[in-house]
Length: 263
Image 1 (spheres, rainbow, N blue to C red):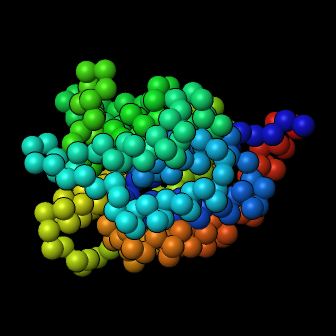
Image 2: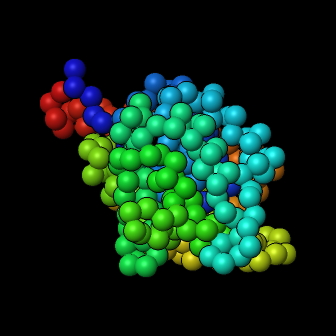
């Protein structure tokens, strides 16, 4: 029997993106297939890590890595104050140094060409290069250079890449928005200023742009800062709670698709 292809569009959001792990866990437990993934920034990181092995439990190993802040390799600020070599090494480790086309689940990674103001979508080539580009928060990470392009965070241009996962061939698109911002969060450093400013701008873009997904999940992450890498377990749980609310709706979408296509 023919089944609809279900795609996930995982949005950017810094630490709040760990809610994606909770969403994926619930979908797996509910027997809802994930045929393809598109992600921006943290959505790209979580998406590719899952797509590399289809192993949800392996994603939980990320918690200790981020809590130890192993990925922070500070450099003399010129284009960013985090060099990004350590985070690229971490990406290689969690994705077995694969190319995108070698992942278990077809996955697209979104980045932004900061010189041309264009969206760049990776569906092939080294996962580590693409994700390193996609998570490069402007002013925080040194931009990633790929094929002559200077690339930064995918969330700058496409925070929730619904159109990208549709282009991969998804029949049903589930979008996960982790953009809600924490109001009056602690802003005590230049890093905090940059991150909070970007969060505000991107949240406004999401709220004012029509997102044509079949189902939108919005985990209650507004209680967390995008820098809250000490609250990861709580953020994952928020993702689980949100996904659990939508399981029956996803079953319904699948049945409606089958009826429409006489399957």
